[in-house]
Image 1 (tube, rainbow, N blue to C red):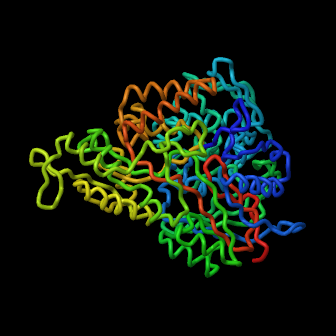
Image 2: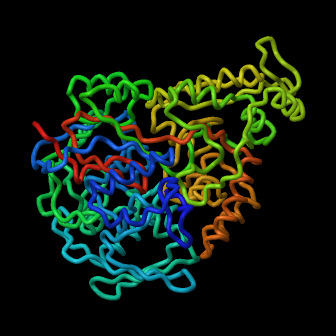
Image 3: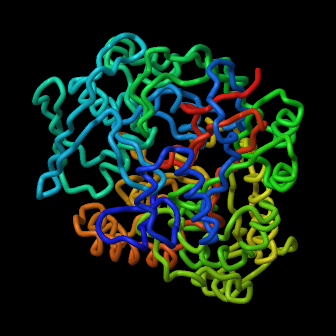
Length: 568
């Protein structure tokens, strides 16, 4: 999510590593704040690259439709509580608002909640809710609506892959009055407010939850600046302006400038980039890394990026079965892989090598782990020998008791870089005598097999604005069972790590929590349930006529509330 501000003490967080104090930014006008923040970040050598702002005195223009070219990671369902794809925020944020929002400094600000109080024991949160908000179906935002959403998130029938895990400590809530809800937790949860700013926990119409819960996937109803219009699966999603919108984040008081928005799913990098060059789309997300420098050099285009918080892009290893049930085999594969070479090859210099299991733009990122994950083929060979894989067959694959050291990798083919990473991991493993067989499957098959533990390797990233991502990904409580679908796809079960993560999420003292997360991140390097590769940024390119692109800082995704186009 966010990163602790090195300039401030207390519970304030900074989304990016800024080496100067920046509290004045929240009091500046948006464009001035953006420009100042960009200059400060440039001076520090870190942070987002902002798209070119319109010339001074230019008035935003209302009207027009904007077309965004997105990659092929199309969600199977548009219910935010059921979403878990990399495009979740981009697809859902036009329709849905959240209880809080996170600004560029990482501070949590009012949105659908105007205020909140936390009890001394950290178990009770009392939210005061915004008045005058209506959902697209006319239903009213109030305490009952918030309660309905919290219950919907944790309802097993929702089959929430993420929201339910994020609010696992939620016990119950009490409607105090129309505008006040008292929420009780079963245990202190340091990340509770942070996750409530995420699009995964955005607010759905209470009427739809009650009367048409099955419809939340196909035609979602929210309170956002755009109204869901049509979903042509495999092609696009279209939205139209909500003319009554008057409760935007960051002090935005009116409706969106755009009349409509279209998100087109263009799986191939070349297709997406060429569509931008040809003017067929106005903006592209997931700009091909190889094209970034060309975009920057093109006078007709602008470029902006931001580092995503959470867990770095990684190769996940299934610790629940052989061969990666043996930590020595996991460590050997990690040592055999030249991570820097893979990242350089795939990203063309646009991505930074991960140093651990939490990205630097996330609060409680451990700073003392650089150099702990190394490339050492000789040590990898020794570990495999120790694990009993001493013989080799005619193909050079190590064997033990007549069995080949073989692992199955799942690849959906949705993201070309993911495929390249698997292929290069396969090549590095082969040199160590580990055979990796890549199976091409659909996204649904991959999801189902991963949940069942029917795989050995997969690749992916987990973006979130809290180090509690480690509990989501590695707590034994989050291994999928017949009763609950969890996100611990590596199926790691380690009592020492479990204890550290439980203590960290319950800690109410900042220093204590940070220390516990430091220990947890160090422990994960020892356990090696995944191979962290890189800290993945959002790379967004646009036509110069597009202005006002902004970020959802709780995820690092582009948003369009303030976006406008200077010409049709």
